[in-house]
Amino acid sequence: MTAENKAFQKVTESTATNPIQGNPYGPNPSDFLSNVANFQLIDSTLREGEQFANSYFSTEKKIEIAKALDDFGVDYIELTSPVASEQSRKDCEAICKLGLKAKILTHIRCHMDDAKVAVETGVDGVDVVIGTSKFLRQYSHGKDMNYIAKSAIEVIEFVKSKGIEIRFSSEDSFRSDLVDLLNIYKTVSKIGVNRIGIADTVGCANPRQVYELVRTLKSVVNCDIECHFHNDTGCAIANAYTALEAGAKLIDVCVLGIGERNGIVPIGGLMARMIVADPDYVKSKYKLPKLRDLENLVADAVEVNIPFNNPITGFCAFTHKAGIHAKAILANPSTYEILDPHDFGMKRYIHFANRLTGWNAIKSRVDQLNLSLTDAEVKIVTTKIKKMGDIRPLNIDDVDSIIKEYHGEINTPTLVPKMTKSDEEPLDLSDEPAAKKVKL
Ligand SMILES: CC(=O)SCCNC(=O)CCNC(=O)[C@H](O)C(C)(C)COP(=O)(O)OP(=O)(O)OC[C@H]1O[C@@H](n2cnc3c(N)ncnc32)[C@H](O)[C@@H]1OP(=O)(O)O
Ligand SMILES: O=C(O)CCC(=O)C(=O)O
Ligand SMILES: [Zn+2]
Image (cartoon, rainbow, N blue to C red; front, side):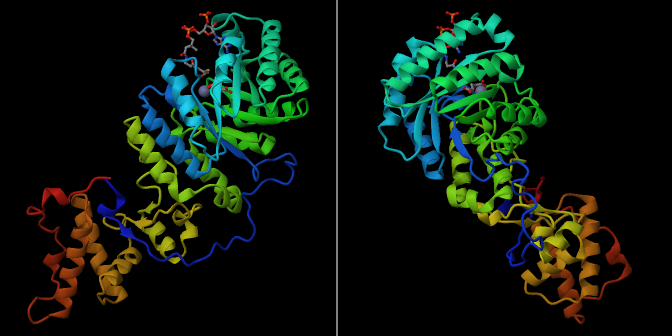
């Protein structure tokens, strides 16, 4: 159900300007390594996103999603390992042949068997990963840090010999020993990689830990840093932003944040965060009005609804309800909005059909209906609306009827008696059609 057919009034006025001079949400000058104004996106909807419980992408759907991501402007598209299945390998080859602007990556284990298949698919780069935490070293692959370093060097040298990009990442970085991490990253940086990656595989990290780890790594590697944040504890977007502040350059994202368990950084949520920090960079690089279609495409493919509270595209992300908010929004949308819906091809709404409404919102509706009421009259009709809103949820027709009826009463005094005390009694709602009742 769209916001349009709910009890909302579209706010057409958006002429007021933000009174704040400068941008207090921009990159902090003390973060001299910050990439907040110079970040890149690695979209992993077709890799991490395929690990989401509901995902099944046919070849055609993968191609449609890859094209939509490319059109949106992501810098890289990461695909499932070609050793996952025969069709995964063929799909990888097919997407490489599309000639997209985005670079195509595939994601493999740190193993020559995987690397040999990956480099034959036509990808622009290979993302190599291996677990470095004690949990994964003991229970996943069973290898020690010496073995990891040896196999990393072998795989990296091999991929580089094919003339394509290489990234080396430690899975479960935030539960790995710092000395182990620094050693392995120094080693791979020395032999030369395009990027190193750190991964909060279980979503345990908080922004301060992210800042510290990225800053520490910046001092030991001479390549770009990519970050991958899971959202188990709700910190994925905040961690991504903090990583960029600390000097990471690339963030792994998925459409709607889909991925293993409850997923990773959502592309839409990160766009919301980043446009506040650097509107010019974000608007010039990414086609933000395409976000809604991109999300709908993936939501349909994996059979989920867009969450009601999704940043930007959630159905009420730009809907203002309480009377105090509505009054200020009508005067200047910046009072209660940090994002401008128009940047994303969206609209803002005032939800005035409820008992929390105020006379300013109702006056605006009266004006929209081209009716003429004094402020005192609008206040009377607002009281009537609130009374009805005490009885049941309202919709836009309810409010319009109350306004029109009242307008009729005061403008045709000979036909309709003026308001009497009995008009203040709760209105009879028994004949209200059920279909008009709207629940938020
Ligand atoms: C945190 C992440 O999301 S990492 C990316 C996860 N992606 C995937 O798993 C892709 C889809 N996976 C698959 O299709 C399969 O798991 C395959 C083809 C990769 C491997 O399948 P199988 O050989 O049947 O092994 P299985 O999945 O049971 O176990 C994983 C194997 O990879 C090994 N392994 C795990 N991580 C790594 C790594 N980073 N580097 C090298 N080997 C690894 C394990 O030791 C294990 O091998 P073993 O059984 O010989 O000890
Ligand atoms: O390759 C990476 O950096 C991340 C792998 C992954 O999906 C994870 O660790 O959660
Ligand atoms: Zn992941």
